[in-house]
Structures are given as C-alpha cells and as structure tokens.
Length: 407
Ligand code: ADP
Ligand code: MG
Image (cartoon, rainbow, N blue to C red; front, side, top):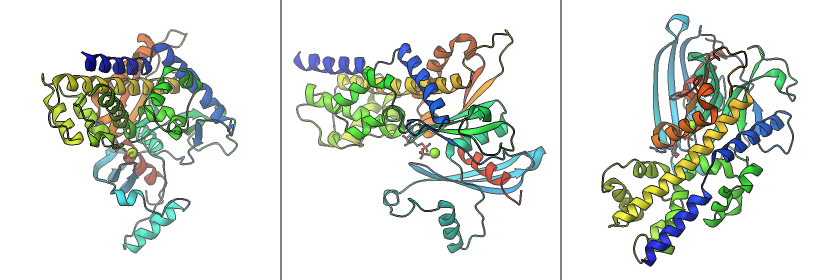
C-alpha cells in the first residue's frame, strides 16, 4: 500500500546517503593523515587542531599517596580517588562517584576565559578543603597516560562519549611546530587531536553530507560534520530526525505526527542504544521506549522494525566513521602495516574510553570489526583496541601524582 511504499522510499534514501563503503573510509583515513600533518605544522587554516600536551612527566610508578581527579565531561561529572602504593603495589585502591551535570549549571555564566585552575583552587579554599591542584589535563591525554601506566604498548587514546576526541604519542622530530625543549620523557610528545571542526573534502563530496541536508540540519552543524556523525550527543537526535521524516511522509506512527517527536534531542543516544539492543521477537522493549519517549501508545510491529533498522543505519555509520578515524591515527604512526622485515610486528594498543564506546555494544563491536577490516588480517593481529575504563580520571590522578611535590 501507499504508506509502505513511502516508508520504503525514505529508508532507501537514508540507506544510500548513509552508506560508508570501505573506499570512503580509506579516503577519510588518508585525509586524516594529511590533516594531522598540517595541524602539526601549525597551519592556521588546519581544520584538525593538533595541540601539544605540556603535561609531560609520565608517572614513574614510584608515586605514593592519595590523589584525586575531577573529570568534567559534556554530560557527567566524576570524582576519582586513587591510592598509589609505589612501585610494588601500584594502584592500591580506586574509587569514583559520578553525577549528571544539572542543566542549570550547564548554562552558567562563569568559566569561559577564566583560569580554571585558579577558579577551582579558590572554590576548594572556600569549602575549607586542604587540597592543591597540580595538573590540568585533557581527558584524552589522561586516558593516554593512564593507559601507558598499565600497558606500555598504548600509543593512542580515543574518547567516544558525548563528544569525540583523540590523543596519541608522536615523535618530537615529527612536529615542525615543536620548538620548545624536548620533553623529559624522551623524544615522545603527546599530541591531542581536536576533531570538532574537522570536515574533510572527502566527506563533503560523499553522500554522507547530503543526508544532513535532507534531514534539514542547520548550517553550523554541517560545518562540524565528522564529529556530529559519531558522537553520543548526536546519534539519538539523528534517529529522531529520520523517524520524524518517516512520521511525516509515511505516517509511521499513525495519521498524526506525535508532537513529542518534533522536539529536538528528545531521543537520547542511551535510549537509541536500548532500542537497538532489544532482542525480543515482538520488540516489546523498543515499543515501550517509543511509548515513554514519544508518547506513542501503540506502535505496529512494522514501525518497530523500521525504528530498529534506523538505529542500525545511524549507529553503523557512526561506528564505521569512527573506525576510519582510528585507522587514520594508526596510519599516521605507521602501525597500519606489518614491517617489511617480516618480523612479527610489535603489539599496538589503542585505549578507548567514553560512555558511547563503553555502553553501546553494537556500536563498539561494529567499530572493532570495521577497524580490523581496514587493517587487514595480518596488521589487525597486532592491534588491540581496549576499554580503559575510567582511563581519563585515573590518568589524570596519575599525572597529578607525578607532578606533585608530595608524590
Ligand atoms: P562525558 O565525559 O562527555 O560526559 P561520558 O564518557 O560519560 O561523556 O559518556 C556519556 C555519553 O555516552 C552520553 O552523552 C551518551 O551519549 C553516551 N552513553 C551513555 N550511556 C549510553 C548507553 N547506554 N548507550 C549509548 N550511549 C550511551
Ligand atoms: Mg569524559
């Protein structure tokens, strides 16, 4: 019938525009290598900002004492306490508490342009806390440092949470813009990749960008494309936009478009993930979510299956694009191939963190299989992608320790 035909047409269009064939992923990885090199030359127009981390001393392992890390993310605020017991005992105990950042604090007027460390120190003093801030680190750099403390083969850290970012270890001599003293930790410098503004020509000329136009995203979004297709902040919203189109064009949820479906960001990525993981034969959990979130009491089995398929398309595109980014970093490091001397290549570890990677299993497993495909069997056998749970917080605590006069 007419409705079915219209739904199929929308789905087909999304499928086409969301397609991420391997050739596209390879193009993205190559573009990423080029952009990273540009960023390292400090080209002012480089879209990928390459920031060098000045937090330099890696923990030696000798650190002793109680250290705290505060991790303020885009969604959650975590306080981590780590007790370090020196070379023998290492991390004796680690605890954490996590709270959602209340919306009214998200839109506060303090922070921008102020010295965060000074502000934080002042607030702690006001609270009568006898504590000293010794390090301010980006979460990806924290994950990298924390990862290397437990596993020396960690070469990069990638965070897939509310947003997406990465850090990796670079040779100082590969950084033309590096004109400071060589870091104490030898010839290695930690470089932080800021992906927010990255938008390669490859993506522009691909079908991917058109999908955003079709779904009528506003201009500023299109300008910051890559991260928007991947990050936890947006995946649920992309699903909502497609469902809205299906509701309009093909009456997916009945004759009237549910008003709640019109509300931006009403469908969050954790909800999308919950729907996507429903394995019941009648998709009853998915149905219950649609009822909760969109206020649609009864959904047809067909509507549920279509919703499931939409989640699949959006998550798969995000995960495959994320894999292309990780592959790009490995390429930049020359870890994407087996050495020509024929020796078994050394183990290469990528530490992953972030709520999206940790909790969205279909996303993370798609990322991993795509990365393995891109690497090919032989190179993939030496690359390990592993969850560094709370890596950023522990890494920050370790860096605090190694920069502390008390350690
Ligand atoms: P941040 O440090 O930016 O606050 P986190 O690493 O804590 O982010 O991850 C939170 C994000 O992870 C959420 O914004 C959400 O997008 C995503 N997320 C959390 N739980 C899930 C889940 N169960 N399924 C999918 N995504 C999730
Ligand atoms: Mg975080």
